[in-house]
Length: 177
Image (cartoon, rainbow, N blue to C red; front, side):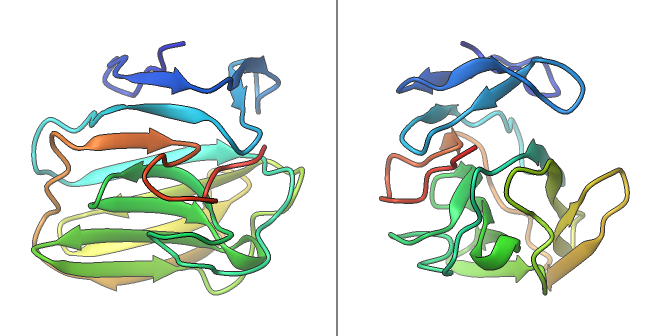
């Protein structure tokens, strides 16, 4: 079960038993996660650059507490992560959380309110444009809720282990849905 990224890379492989072929937003190309499996591999990023990570998600439930956002155990669901560098999660009450670690400093952004609901499709997006980290959620092409953090050093996401749906390096942060 290789997963293509926007550059056509098939670097992410399944771990555990994710269910491919689930009903998605417009097709049956979605992957269902039950909370104990996901995709992992080497980073799809080949250079230090601006980036956008986005995913359509349909969680079976919404986390009830913020736990240890970014790393450690807790309730948030991991959507996408690059080990020790980048995290995109669904957090307490359906809020989106994103963080980037640059030169020992962690910068994070979280949406003010929850717009990711259980059993509904929503898009979550994490973008870095060169000076601002932005996390947003929405149910269509327009963002409905936005959180930001400012910094000017581009995160180095190359050569790191990458996760989608779960993280093997921390407990209890696996996506369910």
